[in-house]
Length: 550
Image (tube, rainbow, N blue to C red; front, side, top):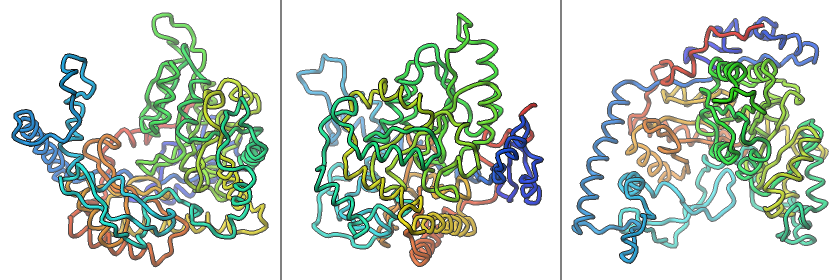
């Protein structure tokens, strides 16, 4: 982490730039971690950790909340007009025959959707009619009833620069000769499997992919699943249950949250990347045990992500590994966004920090981002994977991964590992890193508030006000630039943002075109808020003097 002035944080201790360089000298970590790193030869283990979460000026926050307040008042007025029959109600309503039933559509729960989201709904769910490469084609649509419904004009907006897809390595592209093996697998196996992994849905291609994933991650075994979201939500309940404790980062993805809730385990939240908060929960769990009975927890599982998709933040993994070892907890890491996109050879945050893979209990990742495919994996020790083959809900009830999808992943993974006899995969990883640093640095210099780690290809640009969110996306589409804008409830109410995803397929010319448009848009909408202030969430930085005890 870093203050906006350029100081770096290593293991929760604030350093200036020169001190950050000394981090490699072994003066940074306690708990025997430095000694272990030296024994393992991991010279990159204590990597300077630079992140930024700058606060907005006070007047911006005032106007943001004022805007939501005015919108809420008008929402109540419009609801009154709809209930009085003065204004037509286009929202889903209860049938007259069911007026005495428990309401299926809770009126107030949909208040935000009816009265704010609908006004700017045209910025989401835009239909794409091409591969999600560096550029794509968007089907033009218009609305005649203020975004309640849309109709297509028949026109296609060609060659829109794609700054929103998770196509980190640029490998989600239209067919070319490199995909010949995928075509051959399609011809032999067809599209569907028609069975679960535990029945007749395990193919030789699945076994080949699992062996390759285990080799790529340098672990004993791996298991693949057909859906990334379900990899988390259906496997966490197989690992923990009643009498277990889950310690979850406050910014974890919805799939992790759902999996934790379905497990029946007790869940406690720690502040994002805050080791003081995590250690306090671990210490209390060991000292006090379970509520009422005070029996020891059956298991303590720490849930974190590699890259947090809404913040562009990278997990402070060495600190978490140190705490995990100190308190004998288990560590589950979701590398959905980090696998293939960070690390010298694309092996994720474990490689990024030089961590021994044996220090991670459960590896999870998806194939939907860097691999241009679908599905996910769980990897680690062989006994863990063998257990999941029997007890995973996905293995028992979900359809197996499609064979052509498995072959696409195999093809890409071999490319990244250099098993295709070329260095094209490594070149893409290096190009992604260059593009990421260039794009982030230019945005910061322009005066935008940009969240996250300087190495993260997920780049959130803070817009705050909902009206500016809509105008931002609409104006950029007119310039043939496709962006993703995000607001409540996916983000805190007053932290709406645009989320850019940098790709290795982006050329410098494309990035310059986008940056030039963003510079003009920033001036037009007055969203260059940066004043180099500290985080709006002090809990992200309140551990500056914290060091783990010996």
